[in-house]
Length: 120
Length: 116
Image (tube, rainbow over the protein chains, first blue to last red):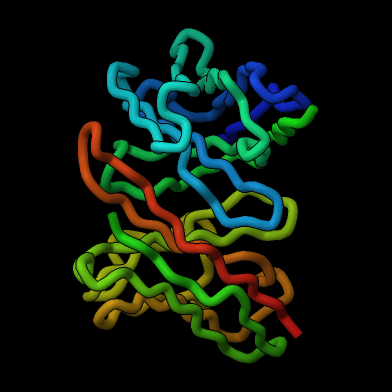
């Protein structure tokens, strides 16, 4: 059974850093592009970042560009999101999702998410 | 980039039908839209993709025949027939735009569906 499981969330102070992980199982990890999406409390979904299947192409929402870095490790079947210079408004549940390609194919598998709280 | 607009809430009685609407901004009338279901406490689940000609590709895994889509003008509709308790949750529409460094993935605000 295909599964995406996020981890690494928690409480962090403004200006701090955090690394999220998304462990993939039951799929051929290297065949897929991956995404991070977040949902702030009481709000809708917001795209954060994407990475191509080869790991060479990365894309970011304007709100996180320069502060967050998406990466992947095929040897561990794991997707990462390195978050720096965190702000209160980055507080959200962060979920990973996968698709065949970055643009043009649906994201047909998602994890349940991990909560990141940025607060002093 | 496109703007996707969804009403914040909808409701329907058990066994009835409901149609959810996602409206794309006028400059993007040809854009396809993906529908995602998010049950309480769960991650989103792909339902299906819709363009002006209707469904594009296949439904998501396990999506029942009670779910259908239609595209007309700027609107992308998701209809759920014979509503069941398990259909309650948030429904999000989304669309890709751009390529390369200009790629963005845009979401509507989501519609909370309550089953009465």
